Length: 499
Image (tube, rainbow, N blue to C red; front, side, top):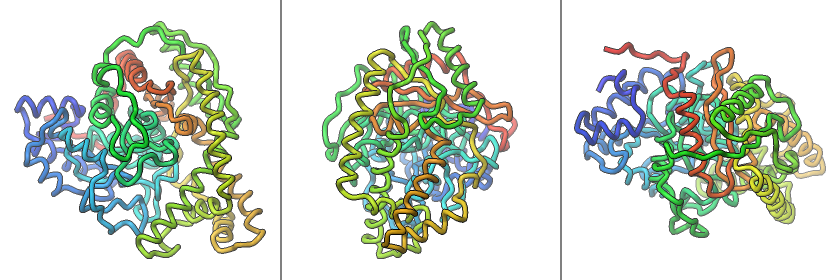
């Protein structure tokens, strides 16, 4: 299979070719590897090639609904036995996993052929993919810009055609933000829908979930169908969908009531391109027969963000302590930003943590009230076009504060904490829209309906009520038909001419 042929197909299409005997899994994989060698040096999307393992899997002619389709794993929470899951961290880079994550087993059972792991910021803690250990991933539409984070390596690889789909996860927007930056479809499943074990049952109280990034809606539907369902470590069973997710694609969504807003939940500036993206999407939806009105949940966005950050900081403290205990490493094996977040977690008490988590219910109730009147919430996915690489690096003064937080155990920590909180909130003004779905556990998606005047993608977000994955897929397929995007090719990487 030639690379130009490979690039014409999504995952479902490639699997159909394999089933028909028109191409073998090995031939498809070699096209994927060739594509990686063509474009990845400029993108830094794959940080751990697994080409020989992929060849071994492909040679066995894997069966399943996606049999023989090349696939990439995110290097965070997606363990593959015998290979490290570095999570962007120096200490974990050479520590092999002793077993597969359950979601990886399900991808393998579907016939996918993993052949590499993708770049992520350290522990997935940023909305850009720029780790000290592996360097930044870059956007195929313009390599000077970020592909987003934390699933930025996966997004860059899929957008550039290295793989038709790649693993991702989302604890604060990490599927939807890269999808918005790279012109991809990104569905964040709801709480408990896709397994996270066996090493954890429900990270961050269900705020963090596994998923994928794809070019087409039908690929995301097929991959969700392959992975959805509880596992032994799931804290509770989740009701199955009304029908297979693959059957939602092409099904009439009906006339939906959609509330939209282009206002930042933090009350901060939203770029005119992001406003335009939402307004154009609203007009498109009206043209498709939906009822679209300007409305938003009665949620204090700043309070929601602070309640989320209390959990985020505490989780980072526990994570850093755990890595140190498992590896015997020191602070030198972590990025300053990571140590700062962990130190922030240690300034909170257990009572602070519980109070913050208890307030999550207030936000859940507020969003439920919105969904009692509207089927979906439409917002920008991010507050502006993808930023340039390095744009969100901490300023020098913050580095000084970070060192103070990490090394000092005096009253000065209180002052430093206030300064750091201000800077963290400032950075979140670039991605203020995604946290709501994580904290409330509801499914959400980013749909690539807009490109800026400079040629960069800028997706829009839809948030559904609990168990609304099927509805999101029905609407996404309708939008994909009305305003197609999969044919668009990034302008920042080369494409072979058809033979």
